[in-house]
Image (cartoon, rainbow, N blue to C red; front, side):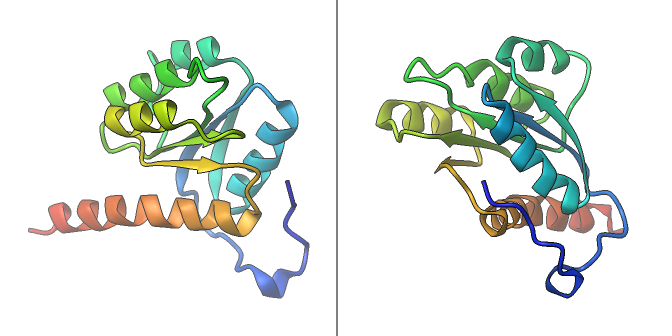
Length: 147
């Protein structure tokens, strides 16, 4: 995965946290890469390389955004997806995959995934996913908060 270059003029500084984001993937390099981009975007990031560990943590915590790798065609990410959405149906969960699988795609979307995308992703693509899936949530929160 590409990393952001350090040219300050190309990306604005983030002043406040955007909340918590989880990255769940068995590949530590991918976890670190996506976590770095999410940190740059202002998230407090929790990295996981184990689906069961992430599922257990969902019993205690509710992240604001989740990237979870599908795993194999057996769809190991299912429990993380279901657990995150059980905590809050408004949590955007993006399922990542190295190999598109129509069965996994359909199941992920039926369970409520915000998106299902093929990796690797560039930092700009990660930022686009975050912006796309958090924007409606932020707008809804502002609309419901008005008197």
